[in-house]
Image 1: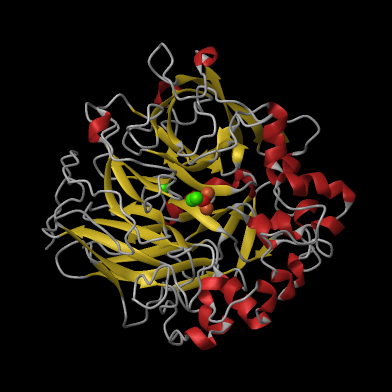
Image 2 (image 1 turned 60 degrees about the vertical axis):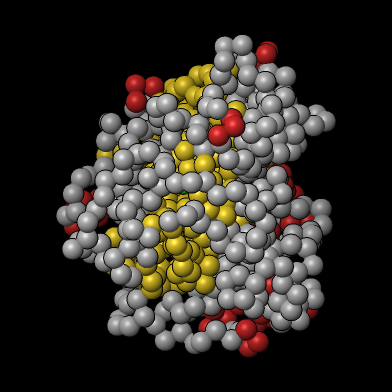
Length: 607
Ligand code: FEO
Ligand code: CA
Ligand code: CA
Ligand code: CA
């Protein structure tokens, strides 16, 4: 039998120093292993990975590329089995195909490999031994194992914009069913055991915006799709494999991406859904909490410089328990509700000079309001229908004067306190030229290192329409005067740059992973208390190999394992399969993979 240790809450691990090693580094007293990597079997019977002869059919059964969000969901009562659910955000074709020169030179089959390497994976895991180590189940039916791809998997639309004119295409004249999910970045686990997956930078997959109808062009442009040239430097050239990615021919196809996807990994035959009630933007992810009122609240960020923070409040209330009736009911909660965008008000904006200097009241803080954009089928934005608001949510946010943030990435409530934490990864354009200048919620011009925002809903009610907020952490090198760690002694904290994903352990500590460390060291995972005297005492827990971003992160419900996704190892200009910048994890060429870290003595991680 397993002994579950309740975490004391104190983070006692010895922080690891910043480094540029091409290895995965954990603190003393911890170990780690690669759980699954690009090309490994997911669907039983998948062909062995063959780097030189990879096919779309094989990739459709194998673990996809560039793992990002992950969740580990218990599958039995004994803590011996779990489901790993993973996002595959995007592909690095130069690191996937030997002899790569340009996207134009790839075969159509290779383009389809890349399309199939996008999407989601579900993998059955089993505990290895008595510690927090986990491995994939390699025998038996593995009936939950599943690949969902951008190539072939069907997704149903729900909510007020489902079936609207904006979603109709030649292939789907009813506007109800999309093929594939794209650029799944962060995500979340719902209280009813499903997973949510953001569709983020979908713009790069579409070409031909220059030939789209004139009336559509401003909308395409607001979502980062060029309306003046057919291809941009970011174009993935997928139109060569499937003409639906050509907006000159199929201008509405892009409207079918940029949503929040809900997957029920416990029902392997279920069709995943794209919930239009949660709006359409460059969704980083979504995290749900049950409010005191019983409604469920999803917090979301639009990861673009000067874009917005959102929340959704369900019409219906959460039903407790694991009964079939409760489960069926809860699966409908994200189909109807109210969508809000955040407006942050400042107490002392005049004092903000853009250098990160604390205001004279000693804190970056203020009050805020959730501005209602749409409730059910009723729009609250002049000149826009509910379907307009939900499909072109950025335009609605612009119209109501929402607060322009420094790239809101993961937005996640602590299930212990209900307080919400926002990773604002960076915004080097803040205060540059005619762009908005630093304000109290985004307190630094040319913000290279990002910051963390804490949002506290009024009366502790997550469905409230007003809140207070503060900035507990302004990231960077602690010796830099513009950094701030909740007032904690800065000589004792680890340097951190570009916070991206956040997670909580069972004691309520905040874990933060980074993407694009502008201090020059590898990306990693950090942890800090957010309540009590240790608030702001941030310590580095692990680093990922060279060129990689740290994604995931996920602390298992028994607090004995920390999972992270190592995304795009070796991603630097000029790298290739033959000339890799990273040889992680197998010593030959770079492969993205999921890693589990555990304490050698099997006790709670972090403590
Ligand atoms: Fe895919 Fe916003 O990071
Ligand atoms: Ca991210
Ligand atoms: Ca998260
Ligand atoms: Ca990122």
